[in-house]
Length: 257
Image 1 (cartoon, rainbow, N blue to C red):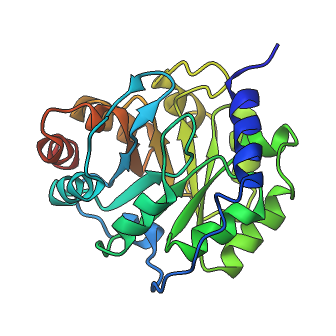
Image 2: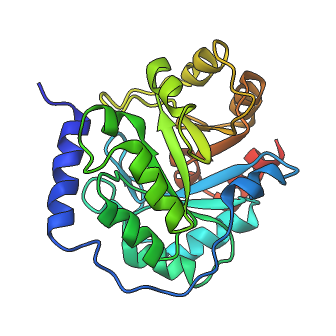
Image 3: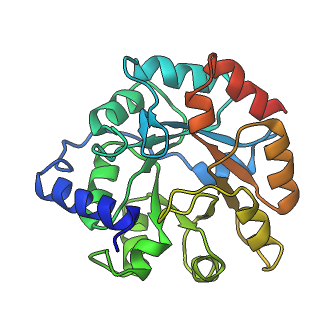
């Protein structure tokens, strides 16, 4: 029986074949998401531009992504995660480029990366970091092994946020050369969110040599406090910000809470 990952990867393969990721290169001096997190004095919030979500249906219909990015930056987000997967999440490479040309903060290209073609695209559109997902490699979905993909990203001066959800995935991730480790509180197979996932993993394993970013299900300063106490260094927040009546105020609440 297929799950969400099977469905999304099939979509991604078709999107790659369509030529979607064949883009023109723009000029951009790379920024370090990792160093920005290390030097952040408040709660390090990476705010996500996500126009749709399979778990929440349409989040935004009529929206100016530059207005969104401006509100997030003014709220204190140290970087932006911008989804570029077009079918299930209504992501857009052109939107990413538009934001890149207007903002000088670290940008993470968030996609279901299974091919070096997508890493090439990330470099061309001015991304500073990319998301790689451990389970996609474990399932054999990717056209290269994890270490080759990370090396390829680094050759293009892209930092890598490697995402895990289970203990097994986390143990593999911390042995890699990724720059950042993400713990997704959402199970990508079922889309169920459990914010305790970060604590369960970090309470069992030594992660002192890694910068951990907790992802998904983060809605309030209380969640930030809980995850920080569990050992998370930074926080990637999407849906709760996108659904807020005032995005700038919501981001600031998380940054300063």
